[in-house]
Amino acid sequence: MTTHREPLDSVNETIGETPLVRVHAAPESVPVYAKLESFNPGASVKDRIGQYMLEEMLDRGDLDPGGTVIEPTAGNTGIGIALAATQLDVEAVFVVPERFSLEKQQLMRSLGAEIVNTPTDEGMGGAIDRADELAAEHENAVVPQQFANPLNAEAHYATTAPEIHDALDGRVGAVVAGCGTAGTLMGIARYAREQHPETFVAAVEPQGSRYAEVMGTEVEEGEYKTEGIGTHDPSTNELFDPELVDQVIRVGDRTAQDELKRLASEEGHLVAASAGMASVAARDVAERIRDGEIDAPHDTVVTVFPDSSERYLSKGIYDEFESWEG
Image 1 (cartoon, rainbow, N blue to C red):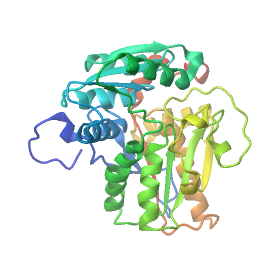
Image 2 (image 1 turned 90 degrees about the horizontal axis):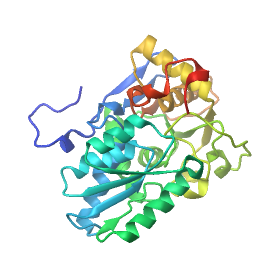
Image 3 (image 1 turned 90 degrees about the vertical axis):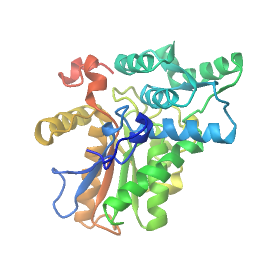
């Protein structure tokens, strides 16, 4: 349910104003609230940056009407950009590593986008390189590059963060969110710190990811099944600002899957593994605030559930852990 009460002119006008809903397994004295981003028209948090980046690039003249946007993406950003592009006279091409969700790739194609797959073992770095190569081959083409583009974080500073602040009357004690590009967390964290400098901020990543290295923690790199968050090469994640982060919390895939199943069966949330990780980490922060281990300005924790589990059903996300395909 959104706050929209009047007929709208286009689907782009439905982006944002998503619900903020309590996670009931969290401590009563320190409630955790999750921003349910599957309520966006493209069913993920990335609708926000798709619309924001395209509109800003068109306004600034970085991209001319009728041009082509070429983006390396695991899928949700592609859907968000493709959705916005249908209303903004822009063609879309997405470079996607082979292992990522087929549902996401099918949805991008349904929105009129072209998909270029790159080898799984080249990771997002390979997808980024291929996107740059394709852009050089096109006239009037641009690579927004969500991993490095400040507009990514600005979108959340301008939309997601104020929505959270207003919903809680400014009483935001801690912000906990998964980091893929890091744009979501950075935008929300910057806004929250401007309202209260002591707001506790935690980044969430899968075990096997390397974000914690940026904070000076030695970690063991490895493979992980959870899509959309984490990194194997922190140098490509240029938006991550360690000065805005108090802690990086690492969560295992099995723990994340247990939580996404619990969220569905106990609380009715049909969310993916990244939300499972965020929920586990947010509850941990809430418990530490309750126990006096974290000194937060308010006894509340906010997190983000980025998308829906429906994007990952073909990978067996609700099956036994061993059957879940990463």
